[in-house]
Image 1 (cartoon, protein in one colour):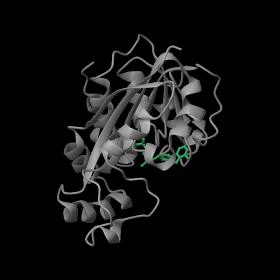
Image 2 (tube, rainbow, N blue to C red):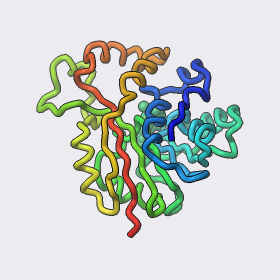
Image 3 (cartoon, protein in one colour):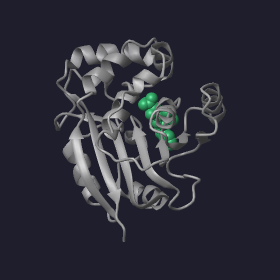
Image 4 (cartoon, protein in one colour):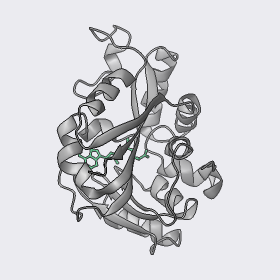
Length: 236
Ligand SMILES: C[S@@+](CC[C@H](N)C(=O)[O-])C[C@H]1O[C@@H](n2cnc3c(N)ncnc32)[C@H](O)[C@@H]1O
């Protein structure tokens, strides 16, 4: 489905609620590759301030569970109420490795700019996530990563590099997901919106955006990419 979620919210609101490269661009690109069922039940995992959760409800007609660790559920619930979306989006405060949901609760799990914090092993998928999807359900992930692998962190990147941040190549993610039983990897691709999503984030007043601006200036498109991964839970 092709849709521009940035038309749903004012520019000011987007800049206030983004927590990284514009998540609405990443969401829209992922969803062009997916046939959403009517009134899909979606888990937005690592939803941050819930911008994508609101877009999924308001623009895509989904019923959304907006789950996050750093942002209090009360804050997100207030934002959803102010947007008139309380009935369509539920805010939940939780840790990705202790998700408080019943088996097969969701048609789709979406996760944008959060996956690298908690999901860089196949056990996460098989143990924590797949049980929550209905058979045939989808997982759609947009995750920051590397354009190419390196043995050692390049000197110019070193000042910005945080060890343990799980920045990997697309090939790395592809191979890891191919190891998961119960899962069919449908697509793994570098996202076309990468540059635009970053440029929009760097317009934000957020203090992290200011640091990121220096880093992105330095890397000049040499190191970073946004990877898209879509997989399906097998029916057996
Ligand atoms: C960079 S923010 C992105 C938020 C949002 N998806 C967006 O793109 O604006 C990463 C999010 O991942 C969430 N996160 C990190 N580790 C997590 C964990 N272990 N369990 C649940 N959420 C986690 C944080 O709470 C944070 O809001």
